[in-house]
Image (cartoon, rainbow, N blue to C red):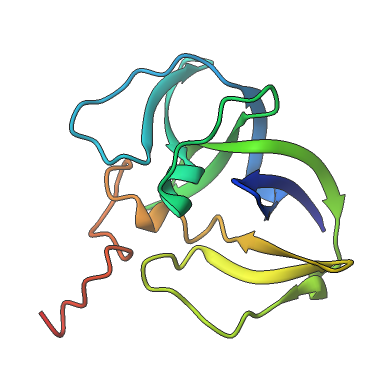
Length: 159
């Protein structure tokens, strides 16, 4: 399987390439007042308005640093049988690497606030966090066709 390697702060992350449409350079984004801090804004991608999420802000609560290697990773996701595009800002978008399917090891824990954080990929002595693109849009409640967010940390059965 082909996967994209990138950084969020000093931590390495990896996502499968099967849903990546394109890796774009940083562009000017249209900001939206009163939106969540991790939402960087929108931009026009070949006639389609694309929402952009700052992964550094979402995961580490600090904005991605503006580097030459900071990119917008354009990924496809489906909601209610409709395909959409989402932009993900990440730092040091480095390279595509081949990994066997069994390289993804369960970390043994799951975070209700971050269910998109999957298993771990070992590379030499380093652990690389896997980001599950299928689970990420469910945590962003202002995307098209979104329903109640599953990542707010609230448990409706105990509230």
